[in-house]
Image (cartoon, rainbow, N blue to C red):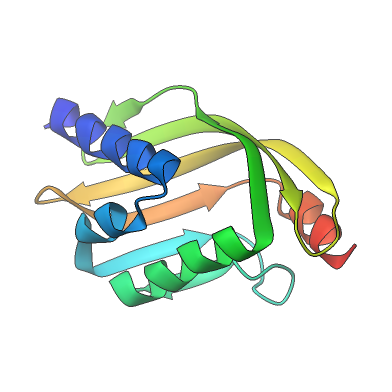
Length: 133
């Protein structure tokens, strides 16, 4: 199962790289729980979301707010029903023009071949500061 989970998650990153959000949404469980740490009042993509329609909104907010220069998953580490993905991104905040760059970790929980849960751990303070300008 771990190899299938890794292949699923790798496919999601490939879809993101192509701008193919529809493929990401198609691979989510109907009750998916999607969460990026932090408060939504500090940055629009922060906070919990439930269901594919809210995840669709999340990706719209990513596109509205960030211009990525780099978005690189570095490893895919399976453990049971989870895939841990450490990575790096560098982007420009559209609202302020400030650059951001940091390490992150994404944790995917896979159930029956679909993403049931996603959690992102990143430098929320840096992103919030750049968003505020």
